[in-house]
Length: 184
Image 1 (cartoon, helix red, strand yellow):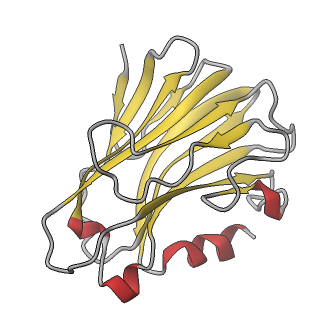
Image 2: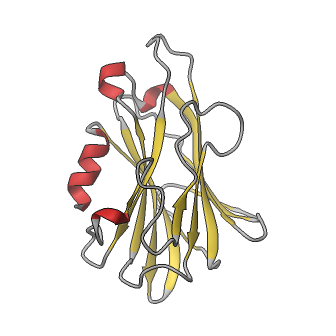
């Protein structure tokens, strides 16, 4: 049975291979422009910085150099139920220099389209066992991010040889570029 987390809670993953599923729905809006939400992952070292530029996983770089992290690709609409984007993670292959994986979702061209996460609902991140499809944990973002264009959904981190997930739910207004500047 999956564990439903609240903001700030942490939980052991206990699976060497798992998939991160991200989902969201769009409120009826008057922007007149389609929404395109993008999941990105930052594979960080002990210093909380990217191991290399190739360890920034997003729609233009779908896999890590060691093939331990593989993004399913960009879902341009978010239509339908369930996961809108998925990222497979195989901890048996991951570069030992990686100590943390930060999961961020941003709205593509949010400023020019006048869009923000206040127009998004039913956002979630879940982790499930890739081999058995058993859901391990889920975090539903229930905050109203009325001006934010980027949200850190959670982070996966290695503590004393164990991989854990922390439900973060922290938004900011400066889009993906802000996260890139923080982690580069």
